[in-house]
Image (cartoon, rainbow, N blue to C red):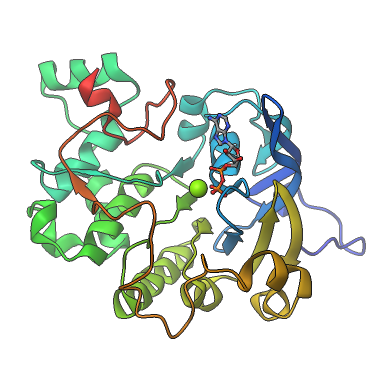
Length: 303
Ligand SMILES: Nc1ncnc2c1ncn2[C@@H]1O[C@H](COP(=O)(O)OP(=O)(O)O)[C@@H](O)[C@H]1O
Ligand SMILES: [Mg+2]
């Protein structure tokens, strides 16, 4: 980000998201080590790196689902002591790596559930009282991702690409300024992935900041303004895509590896570790989320 000393710093010169020295330790494992990262409004920033590098942990830490040290600011305001709900209300939302949709709800209902819930108790009250989210909130999110026409369909009537966009729309619902997308395009073929990328650009053009984690390099290189590369919890490179792809350390740590979905890859034979079961599932216990999970996952359905 420009660090201009020549202009008078306006209060809103701060990027949407900034982390400083963000670290997460799991026992003896340093999952995130001193991560400095920014995402500006309207910007798509990629976070890439090998499996186990700490990408999901970073999203967990930023959104308040993992205990961390260091600073997290949203539009200049410290939020690193806030719980997940307060961060969500402050305008940041995430998707989960295995982002299941509710199979027997319509697309619009999948979004309505996301906006209504502020925890299990509130959700149960919503159901009991039949309360609805504020008018227009769901419709607006569907419009942003171009899914207005399928609002009344169920997820299994959609293409996989559309299902993935429902997951993104769910995060956008409400006053979301920043979305953190954890492998949102996994399992998409080249064509679907390109369309998905186009939608991400449209979303960013509305002013939303996007942090994008994905192994599909053609998607990441196409849509991201800047990239950060993680390895063993550390940022080993950061910059525009063209610089990153030529960085020898990045090639050695990641781009030369089998995890990367190459540009020519159809995606069909990619191991795509997290979505082989598809995105539409009946609510089942998630294995990936922690006990504090209260966002748009299926876990609390079973509690
Ligand atoms: N809840 C957890 N408890 C203990 N270790 C974890 C937990 N979550 C992640 N880790 C460890 O942190 C490291 C980073 O994992 P992760 O953030 O999932 O990587 P990535 O998303 O880049 O594949 C790995 O070594 C992983 O085993
Ligand atoms: Mg991950």
